[in-house]
Amino acid sequence: MDNKISVIMATYNCEKTIDKAIQSIIDQTYDNWIMIICDDGSTDNTYNILKSYEEEYPEKFLIIQNKENKKLPYSLNHCLKYVKTDIVARMDGDDWSMPDRFQKQIDFLKTHPDIDMVGTGMTIFDGEKKIASNIQPTNPQPNDMLHCSCFSHATIMTYKRVYDVLGGYSLEPSVLRCEDLDLWSRFFSCGFKGYNLPEELYVVLEDENAVRRRDFKNRLNTAKTLSKGFKRMGLHGFLCFKTAYGQILTYFIPTGIYKKLHVWKMTQRTKNNTKNIV
Image 1 (cartoon, rainbow, N blue to C red):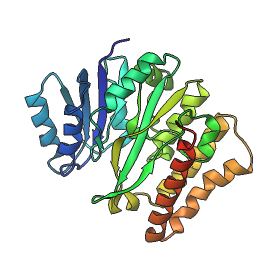
Image 2 (image 1 turned 90 degrees about the vertical axis):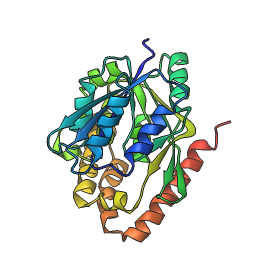
Image 3 (image 1 turned 60 degrees about the horizontal axis):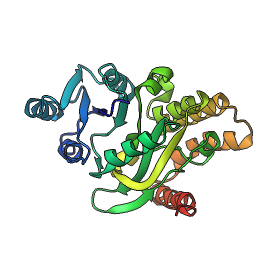
């Protein structure tokens, strides 16, 4: 396989965090990559910052732009149109990767040709400190989506052929802000196999703004997307209904309590997913 990695990222008003995110890619021990970034109609200085990287590292950065805000699925699909490598990795504009993330993921793919996508564990950061770890199942299966998302979207490394088969990200309004869950259900229903490295090779920022973005419409979209995804994967029954539409109830939980419950659930999930790992 072509060992060069295309790193796709969509940005929107990330001027305060984008330098750290990009620097974490520049600092990767594995340096055979190109970063394709779509600015999604930012109204701050994000686009100008991105263009400065393209000017400084013309062989490493390709900056494209949506003239108006089109949201994440459209922007990632826009990036995918420019991908010319076999391997594609994700990255978000307000997070950062550990220096050995790419090396460990590509080494895994090279030694496991039966695996179509590899994610990693995440450190959850609230802007000041680590608040939790999020370790997904090492060998995720469709029924794991009854308990977790199976992959942490921004950590994944996969093949362009996988995106081609899946047709990229869905642009259906009902999957907005849960486009990853829709992607995983289609991934499994096509017979693809994934794996998650248990190491925390990615740091995700979950501050107050991240919690507030999960409004009622997002919860409803998540419920609909999960319900449709379960049916697509051949999963049925009360637990599917409870998992999907229980998402709506979380909207009514006070923010402070929700944040504590969210951290507790991730901590318990991480314990369950790592207890058998040597």
